[in-house]
Image 1 (cartoon, rainbow, N blue to C red):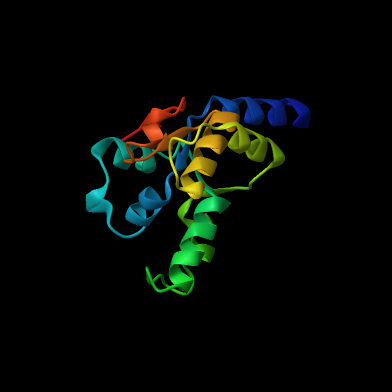
Image 2 (cartoon, one colour):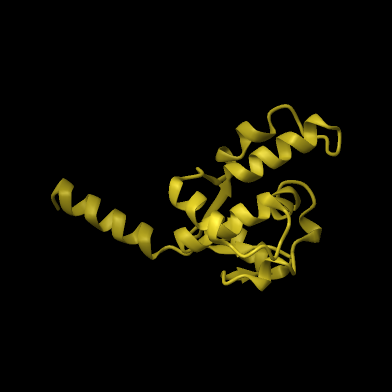
Length: 141
């Protein structure tokens, strides 16, 4: 099999994988309080064939909360996320454009960014937040 064909098959299999975006609370629970996760979310996170994304918006939100003393995270928390299998999702111009057009249902700017990213990148947002479910976005809990 040629290198080009192998690359094409690998890309096709990546695109067939189910892709999920973690809400910030879901990320915290997945990395520390797994008993708070639903059975559905636990199954998704345990299935290595799924792509599980963490937005830089969540990293930013957690950084702010840590800086103001609302949460206490290990010093290497953010660096360890990739080794746990999470993929980082950058904030792109397309996400910002979608963010600007979202109706103001949810007042939390970080959650609104997650909704925008899930919509643009066709991700299922893993969230327990009922306000997020009011948007036109795929969610699971």
